[in-house]
Image (tube, helix red, strand yellow):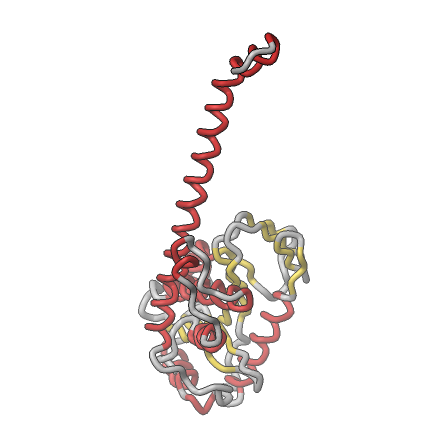
Length: 265
């Protein structure tokens, strides 16, 4: 299971959805229309978020091990990341809400004022992982659920959830490394082998997609290029509007004078 890369399940679903999206016309490409359909935007954002967290986890010390996109359940659901280290077992649910305010209460997460079931889902995932692992390691500490928020505009924790740690991606590594040691080296070795064993996990709903990361990288370039083109056109549009306002302001005295005298400007 170590061959699974961050966001693999999300990327494969994105590519399945994108396969039915008609290619953009030359006009659409020139003016920066996104290559993504409305339905696939959330999958793309989810993938970029999980990749960002995967990069952070890759910087953990050698005694820590990270797994990604592990299948759980029978409907294609997966655990974004499982991290094991001296501090225990952690299931990390990644949410990409760049530029949006996030508010957290004991049982509630609000994103831009909209309630989300993130606390419940994170607890459920940790419970499933704990049950699976304890079938072979009965004395294993329970998995700690973590909700990692990628680049939120603000993160306000009014009341800390009882079980779920809610943290911005920038603070995730530091928080993990501060956990008190609960697992010995031998336990970590046994646990790593257990998680790495495909028979520990349910069979994935879909077979792996060939060259999925390469295909996602190409799509990502298209998305970023389109975004840059939209910004350029927006800049020139604003510049043109400012120029028009400036010219009109310069001509305004002449026009007013002509109106007052009954002449032609």
